[in-house]
Amino acid sequence: MSVSATEAMGTAGMFGPTATGTTTGATTTTSSSADKDMFLQLLVAQMKYQDPMNPTDSSQFLAQSAQFTALEKMQTVADQTAQLVTTQMAFGASSLVGRTVSWTNADGTTATGAVSGVNFGTNGPVLAVGGQEVPLGQVTSVAQTASAAASDGSTAASA
Image (cartoon, rainbow, N blue to C red; front, side, top):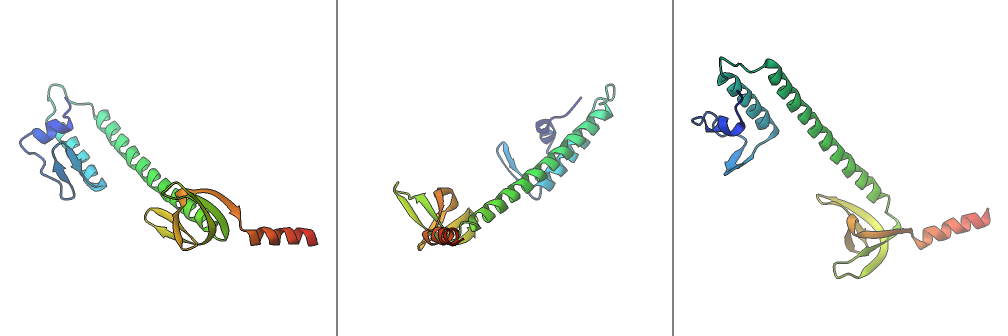
């Protein structure tokens, strides 16, 4: 016999609300440590309320524990991947300083200007272009500035 999460919660208030989570209707908001605690509480409830004539196989408990550990590790990898993407965006945005970018304004018009700096906010990199702030996601094209292109051309011509 196994006890589902809803059955365990319904057994005379066996588990009180967690210190880090709140329950609103059918949705529960908890932290990772509260999820671990809940998993262990459910595991204990399964063992406590199992049918003595038909005990649960211990390998099932081990499998559930292994699945939970694998899920935790996958969440860690997902978090680290998100940090890596954020870092790559920051490096990409900083490499645009001194280049000419085009972007689409909120009214649908296209604007162009040279990037003079980059600000890193909670919503990602924001380019400073001619006194305006342009989110990196709005950039539609990137080109070398005219002065950089001229210096590249003059170096090639004098060589």
